[in-house]
Length: 317
Image 1 (tube, rainbow, N blue to C red):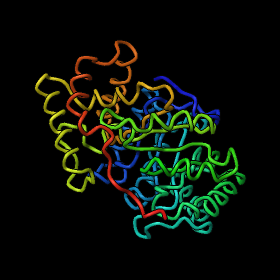
Image 2: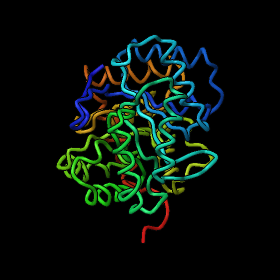
Image 3: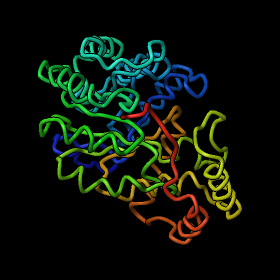
């Protein structure tokens, strides 16, 4: 598995990252032995980046990931572990200095770790961004100074949140950003922001290469917030692929891996089979490239909804 530099952190992360939200039983029950086998298989195949949050499954994802890493008996310096703070299943959003400071201790206890490599403020568009600038990031910097997190980041859906925050904090305050649903076949709007992020020395992680289920044969879950026009175009693209005996999921995964400007692509996994499929897609891309003909056909189907997204967060007046 290819390792890529993550901004200026000095961390080298696998091109495919292990999204651990499914380990929180977010998409259905995952037996513990299945979870352990998935993490073990990921490690064996060269995945070294694992991402979780106290929000996923109401803390279950963190606890299960911690158990899986212990069970795999992997040396701590061989894995890069990221978690988040500020968003909680029972409490909602709380980006106060006191809450995020308490949050890291709770997360470390669940994960069974002395430190995390990255601590993100989770979905920051759900609070006033000035709070992130003036209160949350200073608190995260103190956590970084304490050694409980090596690097700090911010996550969220609207791309406008990143320049807003990065232009208002001292240079070097934020090490990484985690963007989702903006670097895939149907939406490449993150690309326009990459030169800016590079100029700020910020590492870039992208998640949801399958657009939270839009680019799959089964389609998105009922609650998916995408407009109907986008859902139906993605459905048509998936049907086109399956008619040709191809997988839109593999195509979408490979597409998201094509940019070296993005350090790692996080994809949710809950079984050894999923791990193997994602790694196989990455290896096939590096040896024989993407199916250009199929990609052009799918891009043509999705062209009318290109970069169409959905609202997320509070009104930032």
